[in-house]
Image (cartoon, rainbow over all chains, first blue to last red; front, side, top):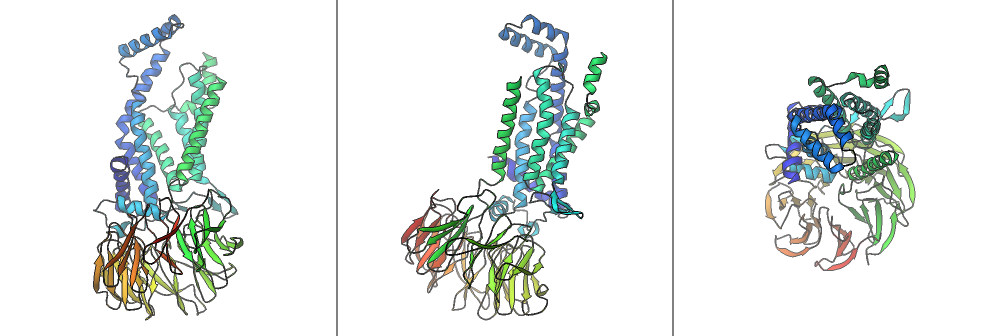
Length: 261
Length: 357
């Protein structure tokens, strides 16, 4: 089921893209990522809308009054929260459901990229069996896995002329930096900067880019290309919706704002 | 608060470990490569090269003694006339091991990508095909003599005669390099076929080279000039190289599950047989029969007259080529309980080898 409806179709779209653009797998990954992000854009827009609604609700005086009033009765507080959601027209699952729907696509995308790279006999065997019959196998294989200075099937390291023995994981650094920027730019200001969720957001803004950078350094560089393209497209999507918060990039900007108030 | 931060940090760490594990290959990258010097069989499978006594299936040694997550082997080890075992790893290192105890003689670390194909020996040299597109020529101590860069990865063992080394590439070309000239790193000839060449070439006694392609064709090439003598299309794409017998017959298999017998001089089809699943490996040619494995786990023996002599079904997939060790037929199933199984030539199981953990 997972194979038939997610990985195999995505693999074939990726191969088709590769063939259409003339056999550049790096470009195929970038175009493929953009295509998938465009298809899932309505889900993302819905997610942003719901998140924003919830943020605004958290800041509202009415919600803060309710919290104070029922601080010792968690059951009643939950009931009142649901009632407020209804009143403001907020779907509490609207923020997480689109993410949950996108997750299988993201996992499938990762699997399809790894499959298409077919760097071992087992992977090549699986790839040949995943290809739809309209492909002529000899036109696709061998897949040109070289892009710029990279072999997309291998982890990337850049060797500079003046540092011939030390490989710099340049893509991993770019992945970490773009992940950090994306995280910072798209995270809305916390309703209550001192609470646990704000602390969690801060922590995630540091941990996630490091985690993504680690993956990019360890796995095939084709995946790192996908991460970078995904991060940049994600930032562009938020920009198109007018939801980027550039102030987040300035260290301490929130504190300054808070103190001045 | 601190507890929560610790909790989430730990959860992220766990996620990192799990995902790293998934990507580093919980599923095997390939199937086992098997070779033999007669008394001992050498099996390259995942984290070890195993030496197994052919008479009883008892392990003699394994390399490395303790598994290292960064090292894995799938190419069949090559035994050299001077008593070395040459095997390439997915960690880009080519090893020379002692067949006696598995100790390392030397390593070659000049390749930029993994080793999938086995090395060949000729003219006192080692010819090692790498997926970094290069054929490396080394002396018997692992010193690089020269290399030749093809247009794509090399996945199969080269073949050698007294003058030349021949190999196929995923770039659809068959190459011949002249070892006796002062410029062996220039191709004597190269011929484009209709698809990638994943399996080894076969050199017939009459100087004809045979190749199978992912395009689904068997080719016969003149080894002197590279000129195509004939081409015959099978019913599907071909993974492994064809095999010839001493009577002018060529045997080749395809993904549709058919085993063909062709006339080696013309490519004319003698007969075909279709047991029970795709056939990826080459057949083992015996005196009057061939033995091959299918993806469904059947080991099949067919006489030269197209009569099925016996079939044995085992647990696992038989992707590799059966290997003859003395009078025993060795197979290494993928995904079964056993790593290596020995049969006699009537299909009677002799022993099963499963490495102790």
